[in-house]
Image (tube, rainbow, N blue to C red; front, side, top):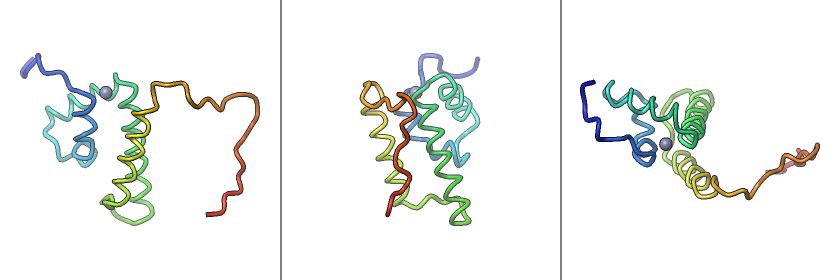
Length: 106
Ligand SMILES: [Zn+2]
């Protein structure tokens, strides 16, 4: 035990430094704390998964792991959306076998 025990990792702190964690630009001590929190915190786990997916997608599509600021903003916006509506029981599409229309012209 070497560190400040009276300093819990906050969700907002985790999400605020998520890119540092993903980019491994974070000291091992902090990284470990982040991982511990993420593994135990469902919302963070979901959001961490989302960000990681985006990074992988960007890497695959663009050939580098720099997330464009534009995309990053979109992701953060999405996270904000998830955080804002996650607690409510607004959307529950799981009913029978109703799939959304696959034809989406963009
Ligand atoms: Zn959390």
